[in-house]
Amino acid sequence: MTIPDLGSLVDVNLRDAWHHEAHSFTPWLAAHLDALAAKIGIPLELEGQEVAVESFSADILARNPQDDSLVLIENQLEGSDHTHLGQIMTYLAGLNAHTIIWVAAAFREPHLSALRWLNDNTDEAFAFFAVQVRAVRIDDSPIAPIFEVLIRPNHWERQLQAISKSTGELSPTGQFRNAFWTHYVDRFPDEQARYPADAATSRWRSLDDLGLNLSLYLSKTSVGLFVRGARGVSTEEVYVLLQPHVAQLAERLGVEMGSKYLFSQSYAADTTNEAHWDELSDWLHSTADAYETTLRDIVSSAT
Image (cartoon, rainbow, N blue to C red; front, top):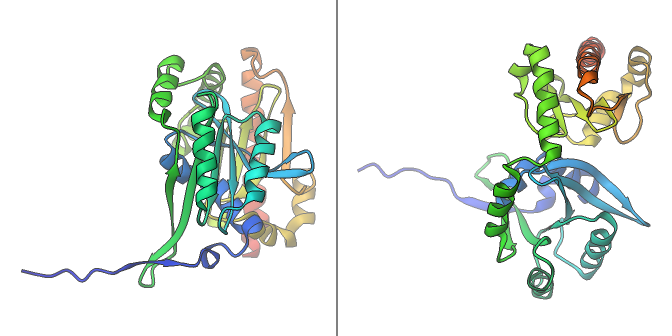
């Protein structure tokens, strides 16, 4: 009998994985919402980071495309505290979010009790989660994240089933998005190979060799695109990568870099009117092609 030589899984300090909560952990989590979504049980689409609510900023705002509801995500690299609990309640009132996910390195029992109370005493439309984040590795392997759900609503599984039955998996907004992106990939079959049509707000064109993505997005009043980091590449790293080329890129793309959505452009139209879909699709595709060519000419030639 051969005895396998197995490694040991060990916890590492969270700040060995993410050196800064706002500049490292929040952007990483925003780019990896699928990992959190898998634990919660609903799909998550990114709406924004550092979303203003009065004098505060919510870490991450996402959307559940199944019922088009907003999801608030507040994250910490430290243990839970009263300040973040109070902020969550402020954001809940200001953003009209129905699902609240509090991610932290550890949770004090009073904060877990508060979330249990909220789940037991608020309308079933609201759901509160406590999710503990860990960073682990085996021997000298890359650090890997682990999410563990500590608190979830008692009715959560029933609620997921009800959403699925009542929406047929997609809300009217989701059906609209799916129809538009289906039109888009039918018009440009090369895009189907990148990503099939779905009900997401946006779709990506990956430039992984550059550490970049082009994010093509759809709203009810416009389509647009902007430059962002590839999965696992922080906004900080994107700034460092693009900073030496800002003037050249701005001249070629015809738009300034900006601070939140990098080199963002949009095309205004009533996107719910299918008569506009050909021109909107053509603009998205040709503009994405121009962005890709420009980035490869300027950024890749300097790397």
